[in-house]
Image 1 (cartoon, each protein chain N blue to C red):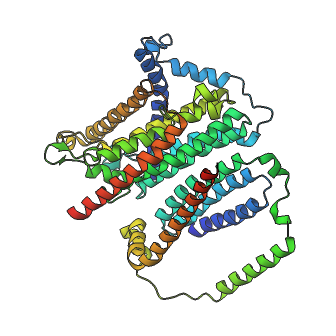
Image 2: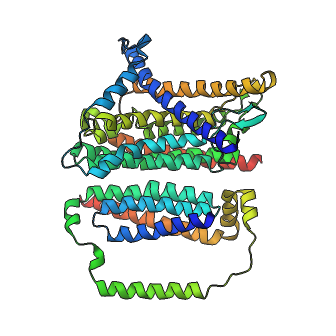
Image 3: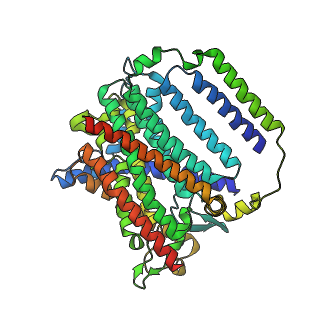
Length: 346
Length: 171
């Protein structure tokens, strides 16, 4: 197989995989929330209600597509894809496994190992907000525009602490390439801990996680779509598959953020204490590393759901206060200390 | 291939630039500007400057332009749209200014001679990655201009803070 064919297969595979994760996540969210509230949740379509997302999809596709009369048509149509596309594109740099040998050829399980890896992720995260803002503004509704405004202010505020937390990781590993960072996290730290970013940067991890929840618009920071004040915020006027794309993009976004968390702070595809490549063949090692990565990612995806149904929503001024008065100073101090330690130890 | 890409990016950047200043709806202008920033990032990528490309998107598209949108949404847009685009006001003064700028640029372009080659060749930048090359240059050779730029920004921040505080006291 030529190189471009392999690349194409990787792109298609990761795209379908991201879609599948998002689809299953809509089911997990509903079932888990039901479990936490002592209900059953959707359990009629297929075994355990697993076909529910499919039924939802059919419903969304066959619904009437309504564009409000005084909406700005082009921008209204452009909103949802602008939101969903960056979320998908971020998967391109996620190292979803180590490498696999197929037909005598070593294939790295990552679509593209660019050396600005997670700057690219940050950039796409920043672009995603346009989908919300444009959709909110184009709908010509007060709830929508308020949702869009909240989204902009929130995203700008939380990008700063996120950037600060990520900078400490750059200082530690000296590279922007996600694959390189994962490779440096194998082995042990201080002799008994796994050599993960989490153990070297616990504060950085907490700041990153909080910022990630704000970036993904998840409870406790889902103020752009806060239903008790804004109906559903920026997508109030949307229906049918356009609404579906917004909801779907959110799950894809969560998947990306979980994958980034795993690769930056939890050793990516590596198992702690065990070097899988020693006793597994080249093919089974590739598959195993892929599943280890997926399991870790699945845990963080579940954490999103867990937090959503346990923690109440912040008030908007509390959100801004937390971002600017707590996370940014903490992030700066953390960055300073890390820089000092790196300078002293190398 | 590279030249073809360059012409594509350059043409789109110029075309979008013209469209941005002639656009009547400021929100459309901002969105076209977003597109323009992506093409600028493409130009940087052609120059092997992947760090600049990423920062271009993060800072300009991700932060500054979002702030523009934020402000645009807060002012009453209906009034703005009815206004004629600002290009039509003071047409002659604008033309003179544009011509003066054009002459300055053209003089610059025609008097341009290639200086001696520096330390950072394409091969070296590709080898040590652009991020590192840029960091080295900024934090060693150009540390003084860098610090001055930082100081100017700090002054701007303090100025903004002072302005915001004043209003707070009056209320």
